[in-house]
Image 1 (tube, helix red, strand yellow):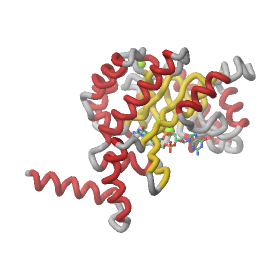
Image 2 (tube, rainbow, N blue to C red):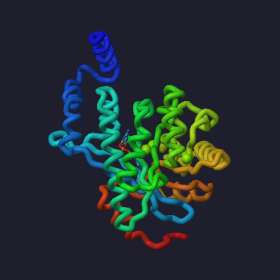
Image 3 (cartoon, rainbow, N blue to C red):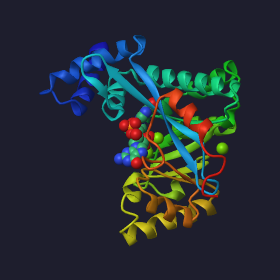
Length: 282
Ligand code: C2E
Ligand code: MG
Ligand code: MG
Ligand code: MG
């Protein structure tokens, strides 16, 4: 049975890893060590609340500073972590680091909501909700200060298991956001079965808002429908002022993107939040 299991695992590898690129194989081996050697770091990208034009929350984005290769994108190593069975450790490291950071900011008088990304595999982890509850208790973090982002693609997995995990997290008062909305082939009527607080519109719809009237219609409709269903809406990938102003004009709640701010380390984020004008534009 062990042999069958391992050959299955190998088949899974081959599906996602190019065997002609041996450097990927060695990288996968190094990922586990990266976790223990402190090569991973969390960056934080602020989110702007549009009606008040205040920065009041941030998304934690993991970074791998490889000693030889330099910065490696999470788009590369999250998939590797999933394929090699390291995603549970990685997710728990991210959660622990982010929660410890938010509660440290709290002690310093900085009230911020922070979002952590979960992977599809995490939603099959029945112990995850209790793990997060215990972490929050340890760090005295009010549950509403933590948002869990789940891609639209991830919730299309096994309905019962995903539903149980999200239900538990929702009942505990954590916020739940659907990430990359619009590219995952699902529908709002399907997503509405889950306890969702926020919808994040994928950046591919936001990129061309200045000149593409079809994307304007789509985004305006998503915002309206989301509000009718009781969700907050965030636009991802806002790169210029025209886009930001358009989003504000259609009642979008939050904006995130390089025009607002790039992802930055924890100290830079704290500095930016505490030195922002009391109320710009308002
Ligand atoms: P995401 O959660 O949708 O995060 C947004 C990504 O878009 C980030 O890339 C961010 O740096 C980038 N971005 C933000 N604003 C702009 C913009 O204006 N223009 C453009 N072109 N890009 C923008 P990043 O940090 O490389 O992360 C990529 C993805 O990796 C994330 O997409 C998320 O799905 C995943 N990820 C990141 N951190 C974690 C983590 O701790 N755990 C898990 N499971 N996944 C993570
Ligand atoms: Mg995200
Ligand atoms: Mg809720
Ligand atoms: Mg996204």
